[in-house]
Length: 158
Image (tube, rainbow, N blue to C red; front, side, top):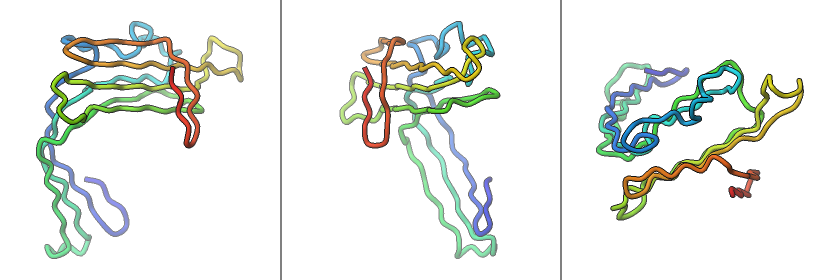
């Protein structure tokens, strides 16, 4: 349940994972370095591709049934990630695609990057980090050495 001044939102749905991160066994998105707190924020892809089924209900606080909308979700393609830590990058971007037409090879593409501070650098220095992960035909293809230039209206990822 989430509320604002005029409406209440209720969410009730289940997600079933089809593809995690890293193949048959779930892997850490950032590898073993993710265990160290200096590499914040932490980022973990939980579901690269899955399905969600359930309902979203929106109603006015007047409590009258006429003011209620219900949206049904049936086998909707989903992606799920978790981010945590005590700091956040000055720049952050991500791309995720998993709902390709006739996707018999289970193609999923995830890419993320950030410009962040690290205690290992100088006080005001930042580092740029990024990765691309591709799931295709049951294989996981990680690309951790990525260069990027992401701005409004222009995305370059190499």
